[in-house]
Length: 89
Image 1 (cartoon, one colour):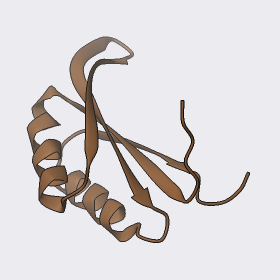
Image 2 (tube, rainbow, N blue to C red):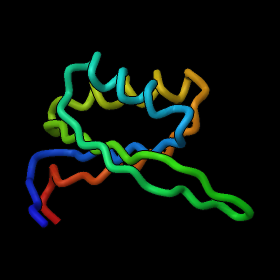
Image 3 (cartoon, rainbow, N blue to C red):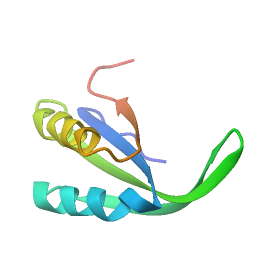
Image 4 (cartoon, rainbow, N blue to C red):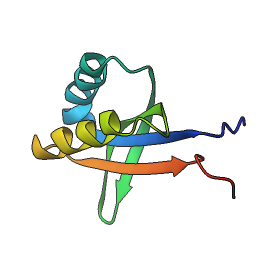
C-alpha cells in the first residue's frame, strides 16, 4: 500500500441503484477514480454495490465536498469515508 502526503482520499460506497449516478457525477467533475464491486451488508440484509475512490489535493477539497453534497441531495444511499494524509501524523 502506498501512502501519499498532501492528499485526501474519498471512499464513496453506494448500492446498485446509485452506481450509475455516482459514476456519471465523478466523470462530470473531471476526477480520476477507481471502481470496485463489493457486497454491502447491513443487519437483516445485503446488496450489490460499488466503492469509488478518488484522491484530491488537500488544498483543493471544494470539488470533493460539493460532489458528496450533490450526491446526498439526489437521494441515493451513499456512505462516505475520507482518509486525510494532508498533515503529518
